[in-house]
Image (cartoon, rainbow, N blue to C red):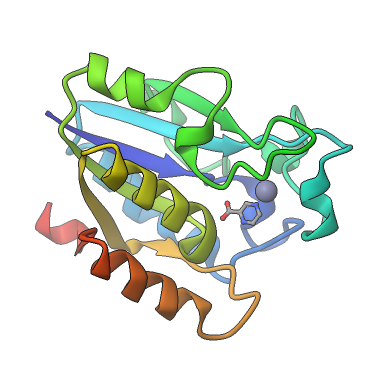
Length: 179
Ligand code: VGL
Ligand code: ZN
């Protein structure tokens, strides 16, 4: 059984948001069509409290319950089976979807007999990387959909380095047209 994980496709990570990935919104149509090819679709949301230590490193973004933390309005959210909230504690960066606190993603996927996880969304060098590494460590066959991710590009070269690291660790890269 395969599943699609959509990471942090939220307003604050898209152009006009608080911590935008340049062209972050351009992957929305790619992901919408990708969703037609999966029976099980899960999504993560960055979901921070105001007092989070995370904001010592980052501009304030994805405050829980705000418009910035909402999914991009064009995303076909009715097809998402479950949403996993992460970075919810004051001392918790929560880069990985596997650190969600409302529900346990690893248990959820295992209960649904998932063996292969396809990952897309934002951002390449932070939450995609952290989620893909945790997926691999948990034993899932892990694919990153390379035309359905975007970097935040805080530091030039980090995204390319992140992709190299993921490949070294056995995470596979695939184009959406190949799924
Ligand atoms: C993310 C930076 C801070 C991400 C979240 O979703 O990649 N990046 N918080
Ligand atoms: Zn964050």
